Image (cartoon, rainbow, N blue to C red):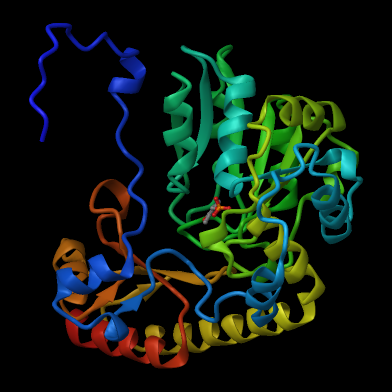
Length: 367
Ligand SMILES: *Cc1c(COP(=O)(O)O)cnc(C)c1O
């Protein structure tokens, strides 16, 4: 530790930055293992909706033999936009790749939301929307979903003010697992606000708003390679949008936002799409098997899911205690600890032996 000799004070930070609450991401395996006192290989980590099968086996080979990591990536994303155009079935000039779809959420907010503006978010949902809005000095207006976690259109529309800029929709929604009906998407697009449709779990459900891009200039569709393609650690996501908006995003993004390893992994993954989709099918089958088993546990309500996770409702007032008991057994799931989700724990879909361990633990703990 060096002793500070300066007499200058820390200059004041922007108030909206000082007031930020950190987004709680998932901790590394070693940290989880130490916390539970369980060897790392025994840890069951189902808190980040990661792919339990990992990336395509071809990815490690392609990364190992790639020769040009001394070069910067292409700031114009020419190759990326071309291959992504094939995957999304939209023109390359509508496409922007990001350092995870998280970066695209941030870039969209910085394009539209300044201090004092707001975004409309049907909650509960993914936490990055409100977090990144806060970085821009924007306010997140949370509109509660109904008792079945469906979007309440009337409340959404009446929450809109002159300062509202973006509506964020996740479909399937994280953490509730349900999808939005096309009629609702259209109704929200008809408000004229920018509508960001986050399809991070598209491959697990097959429902997409991509065809609506041809009708609505104010629609942005986000996808990621973190979940279905197992590339969460390499950080690559993609947005499809109006070509003018795409050009603006291309101009304002950090020039080398997507690194070359991510690009190599992405192109290789797309060459192995059938192999990856086979695993997606296995994960979906495993989800349905897990759902059937969870449904048999008295005092536990698993919510139907179109994604690679299941939201489980535990007995009233027992969320924290059950979550902590799971942790001490080396089973790490996602728990929010407050508000409407305080009796809910989300489990990602893992390997069959992990599913069995989670189901057995819930059965014991909910008894
Ligand atoms: C996991 C997740 C993402 C994150 O995507 P990255 O590409 O890893 O940044 C985005 N949206 C939702 C709804 C998610 O659940």
